[in-house]
View 1: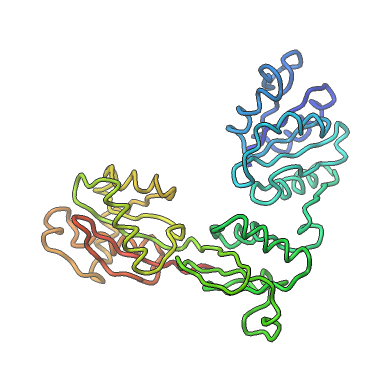
View 2: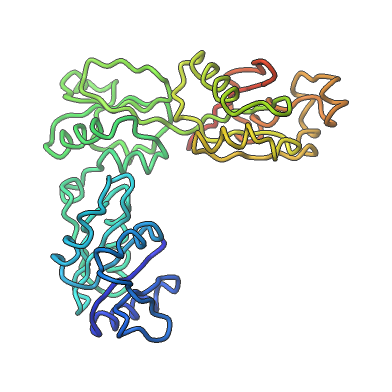
Length: 342
């Protein structure tokens, strides 16, 4: 949690320092006239300084009146998937309110954590938390899944909050504790459901119910290519291979390639475009397992090992299930692996 504490009064500074004694990496912002020691000055009006704070921190704790906070942040709020967690605390440190981005942003969890540290009362107002129901966005976070459609997630959470029966179908193993409150397909009550959560990395999912798809991010793409292949060609090859397997593009967890390709611009840019990490595998690691895969004498003479995309995908997926063996796309080789999710 990258935390900024913002206050406009001397009393607020006392509370801010109290919290900083527990959270050493927290930064305190206040008016220039109160700036001493390690405090930072708010430049200009608080509302005008918000873009700086929104960009730099993922959690903002305001020690001031809630009304001041609302007016200051209102023009800068974008979306629950983008906004930082916003907390508000009174000068006496009695209450910590989760004001914005309670679930995805982590404000509810942060409010509870900070309240426990200083003996305050966390104030959580999201309906799902009040009723003890796990909302879909939090379910996605716990399962490390991508939410295919936020509006669908909102609709299904609304059903849960209103105590309507919601089913769940999943392609991954899930702790039974997480499934409490949902109806499984093998239960007789399944026929009465009003909505369903589909947990699958399939691209096309059909349902006769109101539904939301959570996409497990457990697919690893092993990749190799000739020098100078463009980002667009690599993305095209990845999309074609994913489509062939009916896999959702957001289920890709990482690209994996060999150390000699660590500076391959096309692969680097493709990973950035997909917003996923590129994992580099040393040739020595590949040599220890390359007997498991088909090899090319030409590739071995060129880089010292006979295979790239398959062993790289195998290693990064933690010895996962191979969904597609090496396939060539005009100078690009791709293999697809599915990592087991716990």
